[in-house]
Image (cartoon, rainbow, N blue to C red):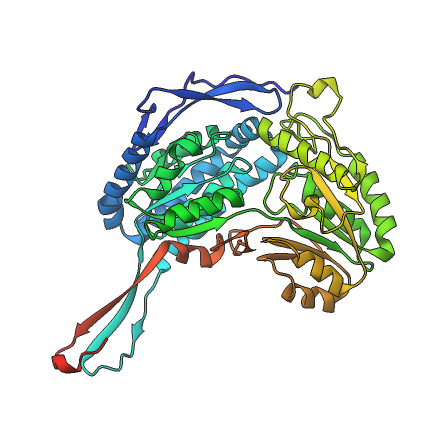
Length: 499
C-alpha cells in the first residue's frame, strides 16, 4: 500500500466571504478514503445559515469590487490562479484520489489540465462584446451589452470534483459573476484546498465561496435562495429534475449536465487493435464512474464473437488495486451506497438473462479487501429491453449488444432516454462523417473515446441535460443581453413609439 500521511489539519474549514470558518452549527462529518474504507478528514457540515451567509457574501462582492473591476483585470486574476493550480497540481491530484478513489494517473492529468480552463476563459473575459444595431427609428442610437447574471450556485458531483467545478467556475468568473460552490459530501477535501488558491491569487473576498455539506440538508436552499441568479448542476438525472423544478419557482437560469448511457459502436471494418482498448478504457478506466462512460458496446454481428473474445481477454488483464499506485488500472467505487447499487444492477442483469462473461462480484484479493471494489464486469447478449441496457449503472459494468447494419446500430444507440455521448469505430470515412448526424448525442467520438477540451462544448441531448460547458459557447451561459436606446437628438413623438 502507498503511504497515506494524515492531513495537517484536524478539521477543515469552509470559505465564506473571504473567511475560513466552521459551520454555524459547529458540526463536522467524516470523509472516507475508498481504498482503505477509513475516514481521513473532517469536513464542516453546513446548514441553511451557512448557505445564506455565502450567498450574501457573493452578492456583496458582485455589487462591489468585483463588478467595478475591468474585464482585463478579472482575466489577469484568472491567469494568476491558473499558475497557482499548475504549481499545486500534484498535491491536488493526491487529495482527489484519496477522497474519491479514482486513479492517480487520471487525477494528475485532470489537475495539470485544469489551468488551461482558467487561462482560456480568463482570455475571453475582455472579449465579451455587444453590437450596434442599425435600428429602424430615425435619430435613435441602439446598442446591446452582455452582462453577468449575478450570484451563481455551482453544485458538483464526486467523480471528478475539481475538473467539473472548473467547467462552471471558469466561465462564470470570466463573465463577471460571483459563485457559491457546493462540492459533493463524498469528495469535498480537494475543493477546500483548491479554494485556498483563489485567496492566494488575490480574488476579492466573496467572489468564490465554498460550502460543504449534504444535499438533502442544504441543496434546496442553494437552488431556491432569492439571491441566486443561476444554478449550474452536474449529477444524476433524478436529482437534476428536482433541481430544475426547484429553480423554476424563482425563474432561475439553469445548466444541467446529467447522466448517460452512451453507445460505443464497433463496425466490422474497425481496427480492432484500437477499438478493443477504446471499449475497455471507455468504461473501466474511470471504474465506470463518469457520465460519458461507454457502458453499451454495440458490436456488428459479423465480428461479434471475435470482439467479445478479444474484449474479455483484454479486460482480464486490468490491474485492480491502490488508486495511488500509477500501475493500477481499476480503482474502487467512490462510495459504499454506490457500490451496493452497482452490485444490485449486476444481479438484475443476471436475473434478466444477460450472459455474464467477466467479473460480477467483489474481488477476493485480501490486499484490497478494505476497499470498495467491484470487479470489471462484462455482460454479453444483452437486449435493449433489459434494465442493464437502459439505466445508468455508474460503475465498471459493460453491456455488449449485437447489431446487423448501420440502421440498426443507430436505432439501438438512440433508443435511450439519455443523449450525452456516443463512440464510433470504423475505417469507412463516409460512415465516420454520416453517422454523427444520425446519433442523438451531444458529443460523438470517431475512432477515439472520452476526449474533452476547454476549447470544445460539452453537454447532452434529451434527459442528459441542457446547456453547454467548455468552449466559447459556455461563457454565454453566464451572461444576459441588455438593449440600450438613446435619443440622438431627433426625439420620436410619443404616439409613434411602438412596442
